[in-house]
Structures are given as C-alpha cells and as structure tokens.
Length: 255
Image (cartoon, rainbow, N blue to C red; front, side, top):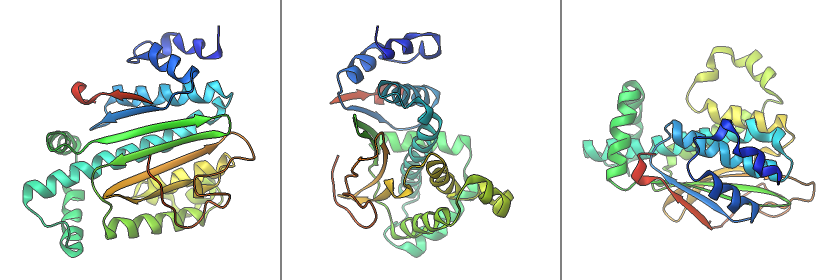
C-alpha cells in the first residue's frame, strides 16, 4: 500500500476518476483539468489532486495554502471569462480601456450568483474555457491556470497594485490590523494569497499572473526542497516567457 492509497477513503469518495488520478500521480504524470466554472464538484477535484500530489512528496501541511491560492486563481479566471461573455452580449468594445473600465464598474454592481450562472453559461457556449495544469517532481510543484481572455491593461495595473500591496505586509495579522473591513474588497484575494505563501515560507514571486499568446496565465510554483529552481531561473523576480499528460475534461459535465 502506498501513501496515496490513503486517499481512497470516504473523504474523497465522490471524486471523479479518483483511482485514475491516484495512478497518474503515482506514475508522475501531468494532470490537466478543463472547465468553464467552479461548482462544488470542480472544487472537490482540485482539492483532491492537490492533496494527492502533496501527500506523495510528504508536504501535506501545505494543502490549505495551495488549495486556497489555486481556488482564488480559478475563480478569477472563470469570472474573467463570464465578464467577457457579458461584454460580448452588450456589444461592448473591450479594446477601449476607458469603456472597459466604465462597464467593469457596472458588472461589479450587477454581479450575483444568478449573474455568474448566466454569463458563465454564455462563456461556456462561446468556448471561453479555463484549464488548470499540474506538473510536479521531487523538487516542487507548478500549477498553471489558463483562460482564453487576454489580460487587459486595466486589469494588469490592478494586479500589479495588489502584488505591491501584498508585499507591504509580513503576515495576515498585520494586514488585518491595518485593513480590517477592506479585506473583502476587489482583488484582496490576491493579497491574501501572497500573505498565505509568506506564512509558509514560500517566495511570493513564485505566484505570477500575466499575458501569454493572447491568453491570461496564472502560475503558482511550490518548492519542496531548498534547491528548487523556478521556471524563471534562480531569481524568480522580473519578466519571463514560457508556455505550458493527463487531461481530465469536465466540459460536458457543467464543471
């Protein structure tokens, strides 16, 4: 019995393709999910894959932090696609940053569970998918989240501001002491991710969001050993270029 066999218990009984995932991870295969939204079933799948990879390398103590970060990034990706579907329905030119900014505020006022369901479905119909790729070895794990909508200049600016803000605090306690009720504002999930990574001793620069080949890419790298080397090289700060196996396609299951 391997340590991954422990994941065959009741906690993950409802995970789709559970045994195939366990076998794939035991063999060191890449895993990819393709989805259009983040319903409970998709959250459970992500939670399970992260748990299995971390368990294989005896890093289960990172489970909560890694899952929280990945979930936030996937939510952002699926909502960006839903927003794109809203722009398309309203025939709004998203290439104009001023117009895009104006209507983004309108979306923020309208957004609700019904809005997410409606425009998530329209994004699915338009083919705006999100893929989540897991790659790992004894040195560490890399997770890519891709969505079909290119990151616009306004969103890129906001992300840079959130990164800067997150780097200004050493831990979640100091952030809450100063920000308090602002912690649930726009983009604050990204700040919290950075602080969670800091709390685990993970270099925040190993979380990246940017444009790649007309798409938006988010990448989280999780070191398992001190000698871990980022795809960006020994120094993970600055600008980089890269593209992204086991493929688990949930597009026909409304996931």
